[in-house]
Length: 228
Image: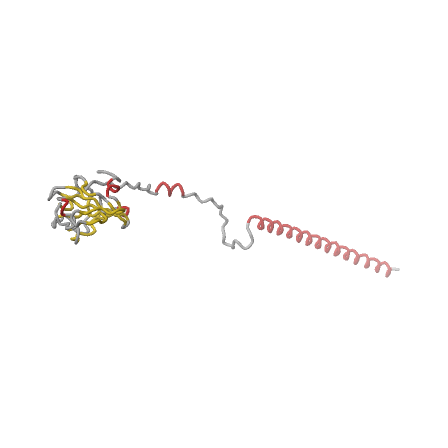
């Protein structure tokens, strides 16, 4: 009888400890599951934030996010500092001498030459002037050449803007300019002479001719471009 009681107490004591251990295990398992769920939820929240704000692979561990700013337009500043276009001035011209036209321009029809007694074209105009009178540049330019022509005698050729070239012939040998000289409108470049052997019957004069881009043009049209 006493043995049964002792056995009963032993079994009861063992059952108590077993139950206590099961409760502890249940509490530990519940705590572990709660911790795991909380951690997974936190990681998911962090991943969602990163995927929205910072594209994957675009920032390293040392990168710092900055706020992008729109670049300022430099158009207004460029326009303010850009120099205004210089307005091109029209070519100013003046007659090389003040005398009358005694033989006109004729490149489209033949004209009779009193000296050579034949019909030929005439690429310029002959302007009456006293022998030795100064001959001036018809416009600003640069002296291209000074030479003696076989037919028109001592000549000065000046180049101007826009492809214009003027030639002054029947001058004296002692011209007032040299090739390469820069001249201004009205500046003396030579003197009226009698060196043009094909125009000796015309008397004292200047043979004045003009080309634009190497094409002959009426000197009257050139002088009409402007007056000084």
